Amino acid sequence: MDALPLFHRVRGERCVLVGGGEVARRKLELLLAAGAAVTIVAPECDDGIEALAGQGRVALTRRRFRAADLDGAVLAVAA
Image (cartoon, rainbow, N blue to C red; front, side):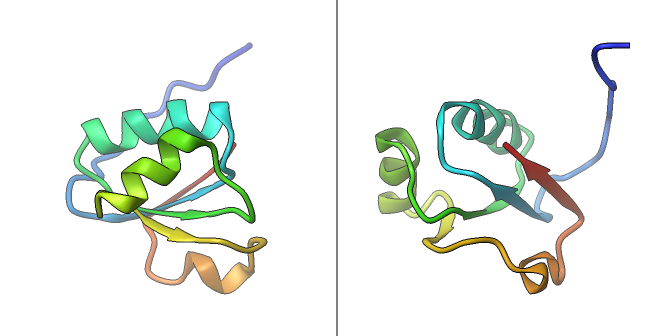
């Protein structure tokens, strides 16, 4: 099986996205469309993610992931 279909209600919920590249940006678009409150953890991010953080649409933590980053999150996505 190449994919794991997953349906999870995330509207208004804290979700953590680990990574800042193109794959992370695609996952981020899905999370935002679902209404998630997204925190991104990555030492570097692409311009699209930087722009969303600058607009206040996501929280951005510019450093490597730590286990404590998951506190209070209902979903974590590694990209």
